[in-house]
Length: 254
Image (cartoon, rainbow, N blue to C red; front, side, top):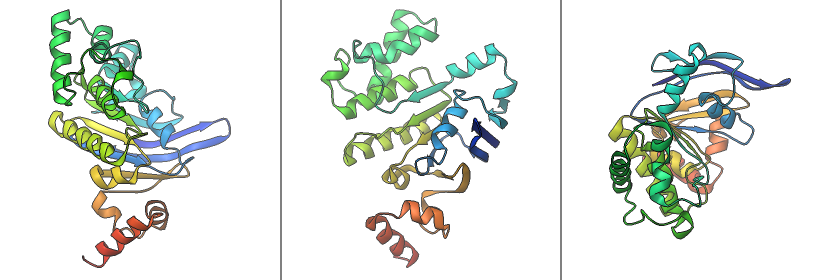
């Protein structure tokens, strides 16, 4: 669980986050959405410790980040998996080497233990016989699977995903969404996804946090977002005719 309380962050005189409070539960896919400039990227980077916050607290299973010493922060980082936008794979490494990289860097596992663990997560994310291929030799969807496998290879307690569906076709994006949700539930991970993809919101949004102008303007589930009368959410989510029709059907009881 991640507990965020009165989070504030500014750059110079510009206050980007203005007292955001929310919780992210283990075993649940939580999505952070908002317009460009809403503060969602700064929010995620603050949770990751990339940005030093000005006020508020961020607690990981009761451990307040701002009160941790360097050893405790290092331990926390070992508990975090990250799926970057665009996958961020090493072009010169094979799939197997990419996935095993965190284990070589951050653990004392033997070569056999690393190979066994890598093969396990390759099987888990349905990568088939891609072990010895380079990223350029596999599809965008498979590259994303590699990124997910690398993120979970060290059994993280927390998983952060930055626009995981960027550049993917709708069918592949849905497959990736479902894979992230399955892994989150299977391993009871606290998963936080930064996205602008409304299909993801409707597919796996067990909890949705909507940021606007640095404030938490709304939060709820994918079921509740259809029924909200929060005008900012309605304007953002239902900008397409498809979602307008879905919302109308839900409100009419169909």
